[in-house]
Length: 123
Image (tube, rainbow, N blue to C red):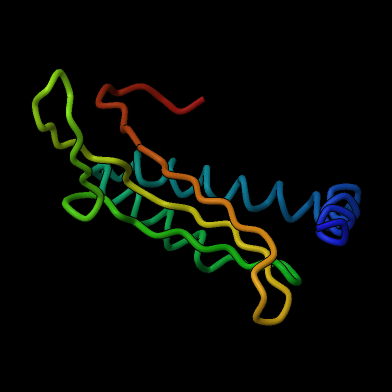
């Protein structure tokens, strides 16, 4: 773990990595902006964002997102003593650090996306 944190700290102070992060953020923003301009629905926006994330690599870093929108992401639980079914998320982003075949660290983010239905611009 110490090596992981050291590498991350080095990357965060590396100008090339800072440029990569900035460019990656702009690409995601542009993906959303284009989708809004083309009047894409929420599912299409999530699909395009997932595809963009999956095409992104930087040196030893690879990025992966999976669209799970719809029935694949439903969970059931009791709410006020009644079974309730709700969508858990639209997209899952898994962050995994590995060395060879050994998994050193893993984090999973469940993201529930919402699309503004009004004709407002992205800020």
